[in-house]
Image (cartoon, rainbow, N blue to C red; front, side, top):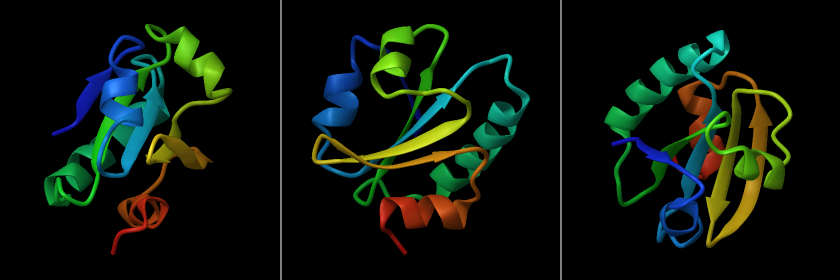
Length: 105
């Protein structure tokens, strides 16, 4: 299940997660973000929660996170492992690309 994360719960949901986390930085007004959202929904249905999890950060409601992680364009996908950002990709990504980012088959 995709979780919507804010500045208040980012640390708990992402940085302290015990599995790799794919973070989708997006906004409701962004057309490519809506396309990415559909791809993420389909990917999430196939994703084993013991492998990884997906969260979404709305850049309009969490500007401090956008600034901290230097989000200049959306959609931007970032992968966090053990509290550290390990990958960052800008633009719409398909399931295969996201699996590769997460390091899962």
